[in-house]
Length: 321
Image (cartoon, rainbow, N blue to C red; front, side, top):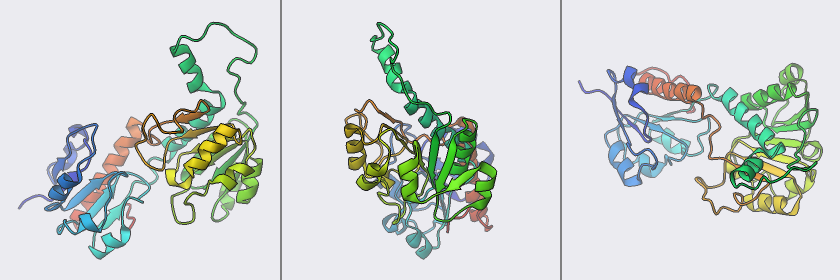
């Protein structure tokens, strides 16, 4: 009897997949720096039982109609806005994601962006690399203190809580806005629930950790940036589309806010000529929130374990639908 075929849309070192090869026929796109072409994906899913996907892969009706044997799509991410859940339901395809295993790593990254923007780390490093460091002055690359400042977290899920835990070590005043209050988090993290408007007006650092939905689309727009302090630093580690990038560029150029640290963008990947990249008061990194070897290994394993469960007739471990 032939083994169920799994197609992986990105190159993953074979060592991470060895334990699954006895039970699954594993195929993958072999080019490290390129996305799988759509036509290749159509061909591969034609006889696939499972698809191992990433956020940049659009899993829609068009693709599903070409995959009559498909039982499961395992998305290597917490978010799944790249997947048409209704179409998957129609085609009886289970969708899974990788929650929990990346929360602490992404919180590390979020706090790293707070530190690098506040202390102008990237800007200062470039100064050295360009051989511009000729002297020193009292306010040479003077940044902003983090210790004791007010942190506003928009979206108090596991990642938001992780950032709050890190902020407590800096004796920050922690406030948050969420769809619903989380009194247990307030008690554990000494966090204060505030309205979205109050958070915007009173926070020194604002970190967004919300999913992209109809309600959060361009949540951070011109009106939101106008409400922030001129000294505020904005951090986005959620989804690019929760921000109106044109409004953000304008806010950074005009001094409505002080700086921004961004791991995600409206359209990815961005190019070097993107308006945000050319700003000295912005740190732009390529969507690497969960990118530690340990965490990415856990994410691969969870995707493969979900696939193995579904193709074996069992319940998925972390189902989305």
